[in-house]
Length: 361
Length: 126
Image (cartoon, rainbow over all chains, first blue to last red):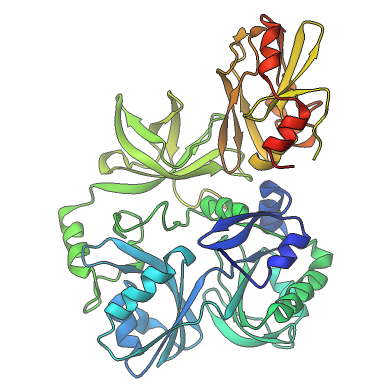
């Protein structure tokens, strides 16, 4: 029996196409992935992402614990700041990617992928040699992502507080009359906010209705998981389960920037150091296809008739109207501006190794 | 859901409309809805014949790609060139402007193996 978020009835009322995702009944699209995608790029869209996991770490040694289980340097955080990070296994494989919210020096909120929540929660507990309290509050929190160039205008209309958050900062705020964590984060590359709040369906409806009333003048749209995926891929953001997992290390995934090997210690550090010393065997690279041929997860990358890599995420970019992909290839082929072939239904189709993001503005 | 009673259907969500000896083929409203926004229809412009049950092209949507399977056998007499520039026509008008290929039926008895609209409704749980 899959779970429903507090917005389920609202999604039904829009006649959204609902699919099971990570154990939840989630809207994959309301009208059209392309239209929803463009609404976020050009105006503002609202995503129900309440399936995401919220795990709170509390205690005197909360920072020490977070430092040990994540790859980024959480000591750089001050209350009100957010950090993108990852958790690794001792062999350097990725447990999950996550956001680390510093509520105070003794309280952190870790936001993890819904499909990994159980695994992550037990991983945190197994590694709790710091006596911290680890509380999974995922079922209590609703989460809406309000994303797009008009997102700030919409939110400012329904809160008395001044919404002047910098990127990757958050504050406690009352929005639409509901107490929440208002965070300037998102998975789209646009100006955007994520709204974490507790409460029942009535509270959820109150926030949703206020957003759509305030957003009417900007033609605000509900956006499903389909466009969430195409939006993140245009920016080249990794998706756990596609581009990263327990068999990939953060360096080959291009996540060296969140892997602070200068940190005294963290789980996976020794293995990742070794990978760095020995050199990467493969790299995750962005590929752009000019032909009317679209790459998909699992397609092979070939050179001189042999397989040299595999596509981990691929779609048609609704903005560029071209095929875009992330693929792991043997390091010698990871050369920017070079042309490499994708095997698409038996045909070799040329693609160009580009630089992220695919979409530049 | 629009499922015209004058068409025949496959288990793979193609439809065929027969007028005289010519069959017009496309995908159903249900199929376009499941695929979502169609971005490309890949049918060989030199396609000369169809074989019942065999692949005759692919249809690309944002999220996924799907094979097109021929409902009947026959000689191709026309391809819908409009789909090259406006593949979204399939979403907008799957039984009309969104048609894909016209064939001269080589074995009309193949039509008897296809589903009628009532059976197709049952197939998709309508």
